[in-house]
Image (tube, rainbow, N blue to C red; front, side, top):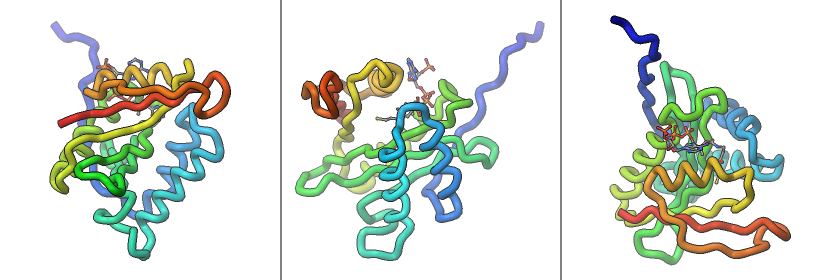
Length: 170
Ligand SMILES: CC(C)(COP(=O)(O)OP(=O)(O)OC[C@H]1O[C@@H](n2cnc3c(N)ncnc32)[C@H](O)[C@@H]1OP(=O)(O)O)[C@@H](O)C(=O)NCCC(=O)NCCS
């Protein structure tokens, strides 16, 4: 008997290269919950990563990874070692292709981020996100991936929009 269930596709990851910029911009623009300013900042970090300044590159401030399925970019994340800390890293941006959600892209990126940070003495990954309903799926993703919610500040982004801090401790 054959079951009509699509095989889970293999998600691979690598460091982003400059030619990935347009694909990353598309991910940011179509993610569904980033406004124009946020998408712009996301791309600025990618540009710093690809620049030739002292904070560029994989050992710089904003290491950026992409996820691929069959050679097509389907997700990305920008992270960074948090200044003035021992072993704390930040997840600044993460997004997966809106047409391929719940396929393990986000989880694969997080596991690769963990490996990348651990190789550089990372002991925990911190992120901040919104407490708005629009971000309910995103928060569920963080819970499912191993993060715990550790703090909230009410009215942080705007009245009624709290910031939620998540931590993934290794
Ligand atoms: C958050 C995001 C990156 C998750 O990516 P993804 O590729 O869909 O995540 P995964 O497929 O790896 O999900 C892993 C698990 O997280 C949970 N999860 C993911 N999305 C979820 C959702 N919308 N609702 C409930 N649970 C969810 C599930 O348990 C899932 O496992 P399952 O599908 O086997 O049940 C993606 O939804 C996204 O790009 N959102 C828009 C951008 C964004 O919010 N970025 C973060 C800003 S702080």
